[in-house]
Image 1 (cartoon, rainbow, N blue to C red):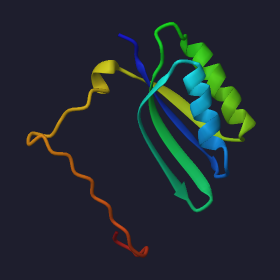
Image 2: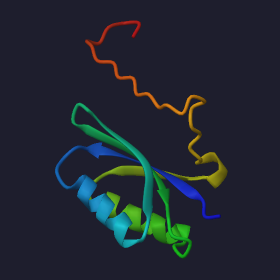
Image 3: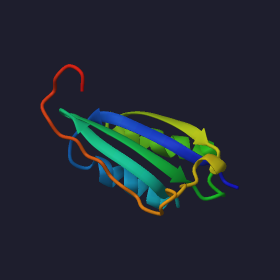
Image 4: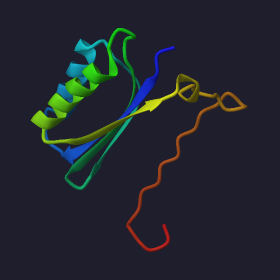
Length: 109
């Protein structure tokens, strides 16, 4: 089974980053299995769980991401995730919940 890759990117937020990344991944035949993105002031932080096509060598994927990240002045890292650790396990009740918290920063949060 093809391994998954956890891609982490960060850098100054500006228009075009998501388009450049997703276009590159799409053209390479990668699937974005899961993702999260957030802005920390002017910094964008992205984590994506990727499933590349079996015909795409790791080195080619690294060159593709490195080229895109360098052109957008982004820092990035990628690690291999065993496919058995990338399985989504449903909750016992079959329900999923999302909890969000917003508030002013203060000690102890």
